Length: 324
Image (cartoon, rainbow, N blue to C red; front, top):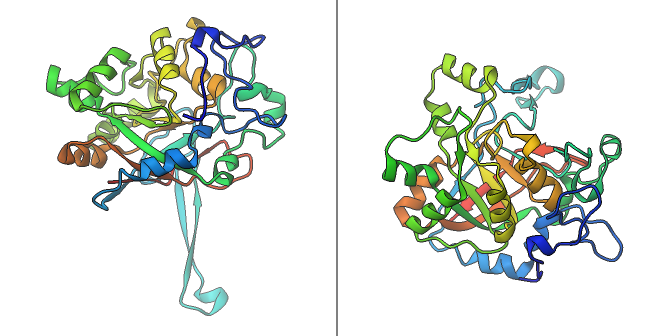
């Protein structure tokens, strides 16, 4: 690792922020960092991750943009318009125009998507007032550093849970997946994580949505706003910090169990995006990936992700591919 992280309790105190804040750690030459833990994806780590490519098989991890039939939180649904160019250009040709809310399907959350609610600050001290009128912490920074490329690790919690316990909890409840269960899953798979990994948790949300009726989808995604995810707790926060992932991903609405208990101080969005600058991937389609990993009996792979190159972007479809 090119970085030596202090222990969680030994990190320098940042005024107004909880113990464990990493602001300033990745700053260089007096310039405030804007990519957070993606700094871990240095060339040597990417070279090492490329050794995961053995069979030449690949899987795209983006859900189709139209998949979320009833986006939650009042967000507008995807739409597409086909444009016939014959009349205007006298060519047999077509364009299309699309509308997407970048939070309504497979997505990355950038470092200006969610703030520490108590202070209104985003990663590395960006205030909300600065965020709404600047491109600071935007997703373009990830594109300009070469996208997100490294080793992906699937923690197939759903497969482990159903093997050990039978029917899994409903993905449209606030069931919290514990770090003990993640550790059990990794042990069952025979998988070890490394600093700089992009860690993915399969909880069953995408599988539920793909098989749900229209009425079930509307109730589960639009009318209740509850979803399965990693438990928001001190154990989860410390476990995530100690593993030093470059980014984290889930197949569920918010990666963490939603809604969070903000008063408890362990909303994972606040810790990942704000305190450490760790990108969060949400609603990724991990179903084919799960089958591929089970078939090959290995749950690590080479991962590439090319977000939309938008200055100051808040979110983006991941454009993610797992390569075996």
